Image (cartoon, rainbow, N blue to C red):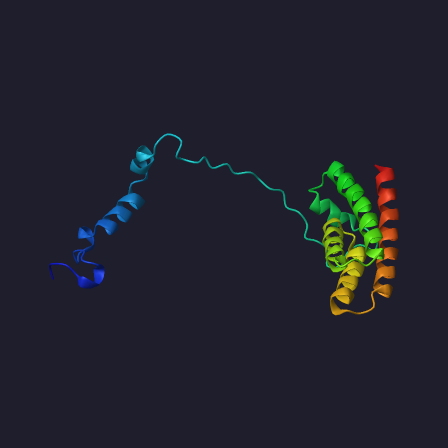
Length: 168
């Protein structure tokens, strides 16, 4: 059969006569020619680095108020960064708890922020207490008990943080 194939958009019905097919076949079969056609600066060098295997997180967090293994993973094992984020969390959690005591209109947002920060550093008890407070606030429930539980969790975490920072 000769001529154009209407289903192919007007290209000749033989693959050798199809410019797109010819281009793809030439591109696949002739890598040196492709490399020669690249302009200076177009090629991106490929750098491969070996990444050390890291153990998966435990199924259950550590028993303490700060899951130090989680913290270590989140800070890529950098002790200086661990100390920095712990100090920041200690300050932030005390500030937010003080703001939450007045139950401002944005209290659920504060609880949500605290929940995320606590999860990031491995203060899972604080995260859980903040989540309960956030749920109570968004549901219109009495926040007194969840707020008290959050205060206790933050106090425990801050005590652990002070011990960790004192050791380093």
